[in-house]
Image 1 (cartoon, rainbow, N blue to C red):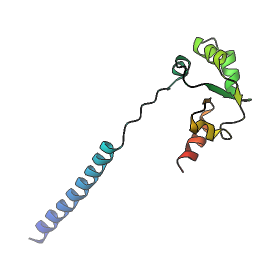
Image 2 (image 1 turned 180 degrees about the horizontal axis):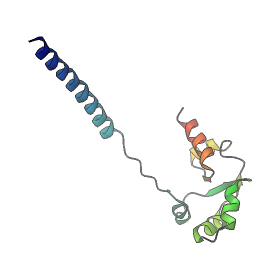
Image 3 (image 1 turned 90 degrees about the vertical axis):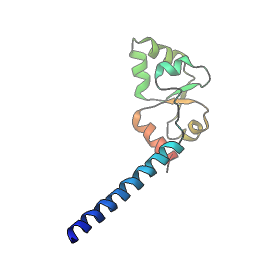
Length: 117
């Protein structure tokens, strides 16, 4: 008799935990708005004309774009709006939307982590 009660109590407790977790996840998914990313690649960056873009001064990205034969890389280099000192030093300008930055992945992660501290 006691083993039956223990089994039912365990089942009810596990069901309560799963139901609470599911409702919490469902609520968060329905309340957080989906964010659309207008620029997801260099081709998207070149295709738009609303936001100027710059390269980090002295970065390897300049050499990669200059040595490439891909048309979107050449167009990116040709139409860029100059350079800036570093992604980290220009993080406030990036957040304010003054320009888009072409940086390495590590610098971009550092700037994004600064915004979400």
